Image 1 (cartoon, one colour):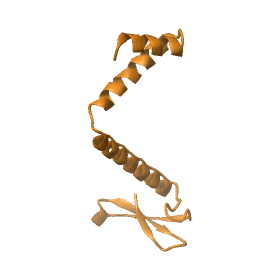
Image 2 (tube, rainbow, N blue to C red; image 1 turned 90 degrees about the vertical axis):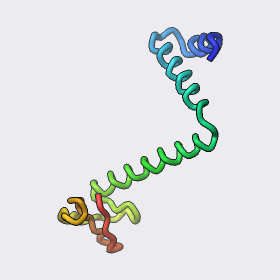
Image 3 (cartoon, rainbow, N blue to C red; image 1 turned 45 degrees about the vertical axis):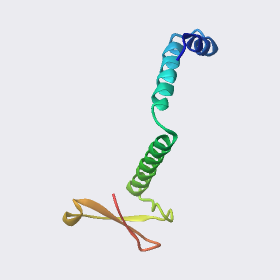
Image 4 (tube, one colour; image 1 turned 135 degrees about the vertical axis):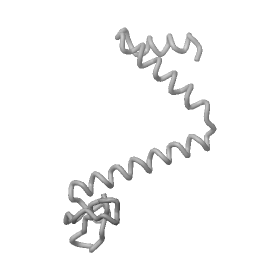
Length: 99
Protein backbone atom coordinates (compact mmCIF):
# COMPACT_ATOMS: atom_id res chain seq x y z
CA UNK A 1 0.00 0.00 0.00
CA UNK A 2 1.25 3.45 -0.90
CA UNK A 3 1.88 5.95 1.91
CA UNK A 4 -0.43 8.43 0.17
CA UNK A 5 -3.28 5.94 0.40
CA UNK A 6 -2.56 5.37 4.09
CA UNK A 7 -2.47 9.14 4.71
CA UNK A 8 -5.80 9.52 2.90
CA UNK A 9 -7.39 6.78 4.99
CA UNK A 10 -6.07 8.30 8.23
CA UNK A 11 -7.24 11.79 7.30
CA UNK A 12 -10.68 10.46 6.39
CA UNK A 13 -11.07 8.63 9.70
CA UNK A 14 -10.04 11.53 11.91
CA UNK A 15 -7.46 12.57 14.47
CA UNK A 16 -8.21 9.79 16.94
CA UNK A 17 -5.01 7.80 17.70
CA UNK A 18 -6.96 4.58 17.22
CA UNK A 19 -7.73 5.64 13.67
CA UNK A 20 -4.10 5.02 12.74
CA UNK A 21 -4.34 1.50 14.11
CA UNK A 22 -7.60 0.90 12.25
CA UNK A 23 -6.07 2.21 9.03
CA UNK A 24 -3.05 -0.06 9.44
CA UNK A 25 -5.28 -3.07 10.11
CA UNK A 26 -7.41 -2.28 7.05
CA UNK A 27 -4.34 -2.06 4.84
CA UNK A 28 -2.91 -5.29 6.32
CA UNK A 29 -6.22 -7.06 5.68
CA UNK A 30 -6.29 -5.76 2.12
CA UNK A 31 -2.72 -7.00 1.56
CA UNK A 32 -3.59 -10.36 3.12
CA UNK A 33 -6.55 -10.85 0.79
CA UNK A 34 -4.49 -9.89 -2.27
CA UNK A 35 -2.33 -13.00 -1.77
CA UNK A 36 -5.20 -15.31 -2.68
CA UNK A 37 -7.03 -15.84 -5.92
CA UNK A 38 -10.76 -15.20 -6.16
CA UNK A 39 -11.47 -18.94 -5.97
CA UNK A 40 -9.41 -19.30 -2.80
CA UNK A 41 -11.12 -16.28 -1.24
CA UNK A 42 -14.55 -17.74 -2.08
CA UNK A 43 -13.54 -21.08 -0.57
CA UNK A 44 -12.29 -19.38 2.62
CA UNK A 45 -15.53 -17.40 2.87
CA UNK A 46 -17.54 -20.59 2.35
CA UNK A 47 -15.57 -22.36 5.10
CA UNK A 48 -16.07 -19.44 7.51
CA UNK A 49 -19.80 -19.42 6.78
CA UNK A 50 -20.06 -23.18 7.35
CA UNK A 51 -18.30 -22.84 10.71
CA UNK A 52 -20.59 -19.96 11.68
CA UNK A 53 -23.72 -21.96 10.74
CA UNK A 54 -22.52 -24.93 12.81
CA UNK A 55 -21.85 -22.64 15.79
CA UNK A 56 -25.37 -21.20 15.52
CA UNK A 57 -26.85 -24.70 15.27
CA UNK A 58 -24.99 -25.88 18.38
CA UNK A 59 -25.98 -22.73 20.28
CA UNK A 60 -29.65 -23.32 19.43
CA UNK A 61 -29.42 -26.93 20.56
CA UNK A 62 -27.81 -25.96 23.86
CA UNK A 63 -30.64 -23.48 24.45
CA UNK A 64 -33.22 -26.20 23.84
CA UNK A 65 -34.38 -24.93 20.43
CA UNK A 66 -34.61 -27.32 17.50
CA UNK A 67 -32.46 -25.95 14.66
CA UNK A 68 -34.73 -27.31 11.93
CA UNK A 69 -38.24 -26.45 13.18
CA UNK A 70 -37.56 -24.06 16.11
CA UNK A 71 -39.51 -26.39 18.39
CA UNK A 72 -38.63 -27.44 21.92
CA UNK A 73 -35.89 -30.00 22.55
CA UNK A 74 -35.81 -32.57 25.33
CA UNK A 75 -32.38 -33.10 26.86
CA UNK A 76 -31.17 -36.67 26.79
CA UNK A 77 -28.30 -38.45 28.47
CA UNK A 78 -24.70 -38.45 27.34
CA UNK A 79 -23.87 -41.56 25.35
CA UNK A 80 -20.55 -43.35 25.53
CA UNK A 81 -20.88 -44.50 21.90
CA UNK A 82 -21.18 -40.87 20.70
CA UNK A 83 -18.03 -39.64 22.47
CA UNK A 84 -20.13 -38.59 25.45
CA UNK A 85 -22.16 -36.11 23.42
CA UNK A 86 -25.61 -35.35 24.74
CA UNK A 87 -28.59 -36.25 22.57
CA UNK A 88 -31.45 -33.78 22.20
CA UNK A 89 -34.84 -35.00 20.94
CA UNK A 90 -37.32 -32.70 19.20
CA UNK A 91 -40.83 -32.89 20.62
CA UNK A 92 -42.56 -32.01 17.36
CA UNK A 93 -40.58 -33.74 14.59
CA UNK A 94 -39.13 -36.68 16.55
CA UNK A 95 -35.59 -35.85 15.36
CA UNK A 96 -32.43 -36.35 17.40
CA UNK A 97 -29.60 -33.79 17.50
CA UNK A 98 -26.16 -34.11 19.05
CA UNK A 99 -24.29 -31.24 20.68
